Length: 325
Ligand SMILES: [Zn+2]
Image 1 (cartoon, rainbow, N blue to C red):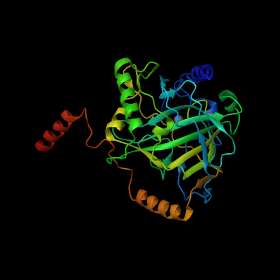
Image 2: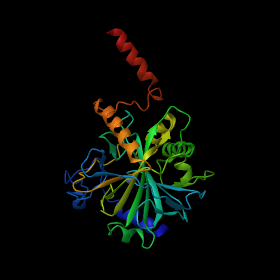
Image 3: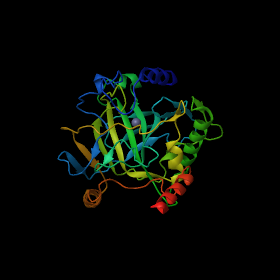
Image 4: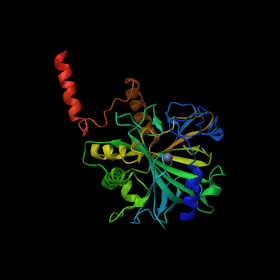
């Protein structure tokens, strides 16, 4: 698996950049990312005509996700990819039809101004960030899976910033260490010392019984239309400190990677199914959320509010400027 991961990583590391461009000054995401019929990410809006509520939550059958392991990190110039040698986690159930083997995980985020950087949006709005746990069908390998409509499955979790005490400790420590490595060595490939964690630690406390499902693609070149997408309704919650660290977790030639998300793609004729334990309750909740979102021009969370660690000087300048007026 390690060899496969290496081959795939280098094959996908061809030159492309955020934001997505098509043939502009030589930088392009390529033809396969153009005019897709099942592109990802998408906007998740329950009023869309192909949006369906399904009331039958089928249990997830997840094995190996509790495994405490050491992890490797690699800066692929677009995000940080985390892998673990011999991490043997797989799932079935959750209405997905196959068994899928865990491969790796990575994050998408916005920028320091607090612009959200999740890939999927909810009612047109980004959350702070999003984490993707990439899986491939356990009866084939990852590369074969890229050529099949159900070859891959990604479990996606929205990440929101909280002031409460329910922030995720494992992601807190992970982001702190990634930022340290970023400052120290520009995130060349490496591994963490004395920091083992499990995937379960990263999603601790998240309710897995309510989720969106649709057929989509990779959100980076080659945009393979091979992914059974699951996006969970319940987010992972992180602290402002962790949010600040995550934004600085990847560094390339002294430039922080930011806004590493692809814009939402047309849903077209695809179905989005929201599986839950109570569709009636969620219909009401979705209606309230959507009305709330529509009242705002943008989701004006200042995610790093009160956490402008580098901006104290700036704040003072602002105060003076205000006095001068
Ligand atoms: Zn992703």
